[in-house]
Length: 263
Image (cartoon, rainbow, N blue to C red; front, side):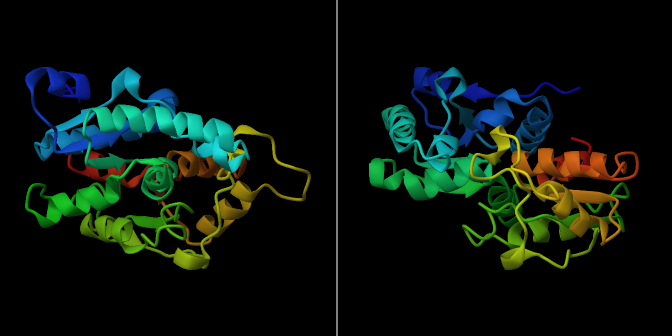
């Protein structure tokens, strides 16, 4: 396995340099064992494109998304102000994250508290690397013609109007992209947003993630692709509830790119 190169903002500061981007890993990407694989996949892509990037490491704290959605505005502002102090101290200009929750919070909710940054989702940044010729994607026999359906994360799609970028990346890999009947603006939530990730569902006749997985299964996919660690967990659990985990994979767009390019 090739060595991953990951430097911290403190490392750059010590050298008197600024990275091109700050990679905001997010809580899931830092602590959740499944989501760590997405983090690694994105780092491999950044290394392959020779991007000078940094992470905050132990100086990164939760963006406060969960606290805000759960109604604890006070805790959200405390977490945000702490992060903004660190980010502004390092004179950070550009942030890229693989978590739509962090993306939405940093992009839309930090400016009013004094945190103004150019924020991108990792799929947007990968597309930029492709357009600039810094990253080349070979059509891969591993994915060529595979039936893939893309699940839109709420905070990437409906909240921030990023619909086509992840789909364009998937098409570049030569997959057979099948749309669910509810997609883009009408896409159904995976059931984890709004801090629902951290509590048991209320009584009802079906869990949201199972309902969304049924949408996906109608397309008869070999792979369910998404761009959010929360969605990944919920769709994976949905696939297990349908006992399809041996035939259907749930993978982040970054993982599909890294795997197909043997990174």
